[in-house]
Each structure stands twice: as C-alpha cells, then as structure tokens.
Image (tube, rainbow, N blue to C red):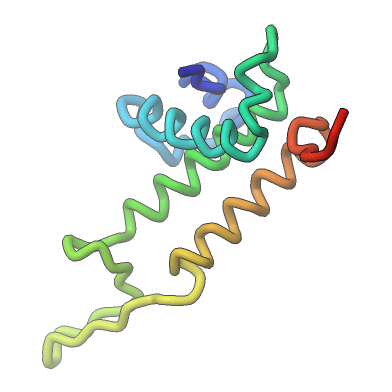
Length: 126
C-alpha cells in the first residue's frame, strides 16, 4: 500500500517551517490512514500514478493532522471532553464538530480542497 507523504515531505513541503502537530514517530501511522481515505475517494487512481502529485501529498498531510488531532483530544472512553469542572466532578462532552458526521464533513472538505481540480475524484466515464 502506497503512503502518499513521508515525514520529510510533511516537514519541508507541507509545514514550511511551522511546528509539526504530529510527532515524527507517529506520522507514518497517520499518513497511512490518510492515504487510505484518499485512495478510497479517488477510486484507487492514485495508486496507478507513476508520480504522486503534490496536491495528493498535501492532502495526505492535512488529513493526517486532522485525524491525529481528533484522536488526541479523546479521553479514555473515546469521547471528546469540551470542559471539566472539579467542583463536583462534572464534564461536558463536545458533540457537534467532533461527532462522526462532523469529522467526516471536515475530512470531505480537506479532500475536496486539495483534489477537486486534479481529476482524481471524477466518478464519470472517461
């Protein structure tokens, strides 16, 4: 299975000097998951390319960051804690933006942003 971005691409091309959100050791895992999403949305066209377009690599990096950030804010129950008060041990869990539907919507937006003009997402007859 092809992974569309490596740690070097992430740091030099995508981040352009910004601090990484994903630790170096964790990046290959999240890039693999992001590549799977891209593969699915492009009908496996990306694996058939001799050279991976820069847009696919950028998409992979941004998706990996999104997936990592969602996972890193979950507590041990898998829920996303929005606020916590220790005056009675209360907590409020976030449900809108980080619901499954909200996460899927933001991932869709990332994929469209990077890949809509590449022709890789075209689902008609060529």
